[in-house]
Image (cartoon, rainbow, N blue to C red; front, top):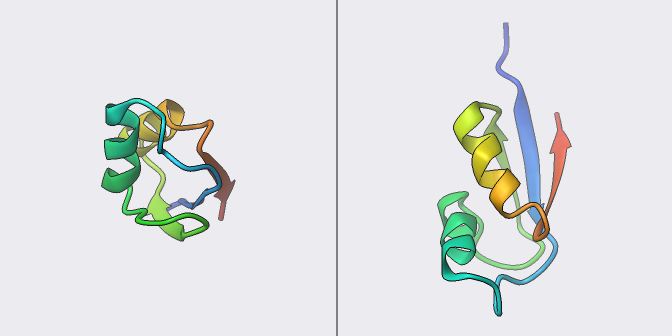
Length: 61
């Protein structure tokens, strides 16, 4: 069975937010606004997305 994936797009800037939130965006592999990455759906990624949910848009693939 194929792994579930998430499509994550940064929709708001991390500038002006807490340092650890900006670092979480970088750890997700996002480097600039409106960039989209596909990530494997697992608890650690879900936790990171929860931390920056106000900065990103998440879609299940």
